[in-house]
Image (cartoon, rainbow, N blue to C red; front, side):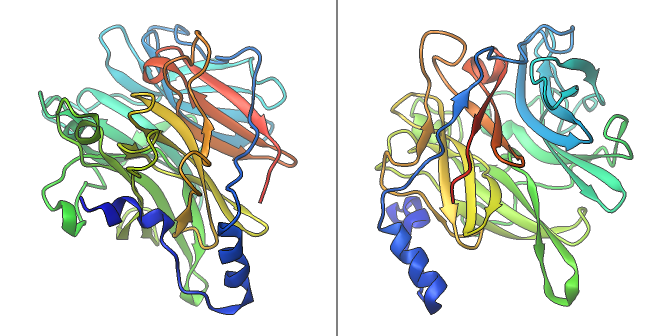
Length: 353
């Protein structure tokens, strides 16, 4: 991978009109991250609610439905089999979770999701809810290449789900620089963007896992943040790499995984997880954009938002962030040590542009 690829997220764009001139000027200022305030009772969803999540609670994805949070996450059973589970709570009682258990089972022998169903992403298409999830096969010794596809399940009510197909709806293909790559995972949301003719266009944020087993962290954990788009949630195209690791930022020189973006009055903000040699594992970073495609991260060190801290549940890593935009604040859900082995925590922050 060439150095210019790692730095593409900082590349300047053509300046046309006063809006982009102002945006370019903003890039010359120090990058500001949100001031996240962790919940005093973190982790608010620790493992052990049932046999379905005794090993971990990971990959939080939250939908606000009525006056409740619907928290979709991956739970690990005693044999490390992982399934998508659901927990709910009132939005004003973020520690009062009711666990509903797994929503569907893993695939059969030889399937793309034989061992794991993880990384849920939920979005409503018309009257149907779609859940995209990452499957991990039983392939041995292949590392990240064991993630061989993204599957789809469909629901009418967010509670009862049925797989759309036993096969993945997305594969890790379509990128010229990684023609033989299989590794693909979720981690980000779907946003709706306008298109010609007044139709809704759906943009999915996910992860291209290009790493293969190695003693070198930068090779073993290599991941890129990517997008693709769809008109119906079934057929996807227009794949693009939008964020890569930065060699000169030691907390994100190995991997960046799918962005979680949200719209602001002046453009877009996003939060994402990164892996680097500074911590040897995940930390949480931020980025900004005027169009949701070209992202800016400031100088190395400026966009690191949440780092491992203390000697407790998040002392070694913080990862899998998901943001819910509320009336006067941002609500963050994220995981701690061991890829969710210590559970899911939450934090809040006041919005910034």
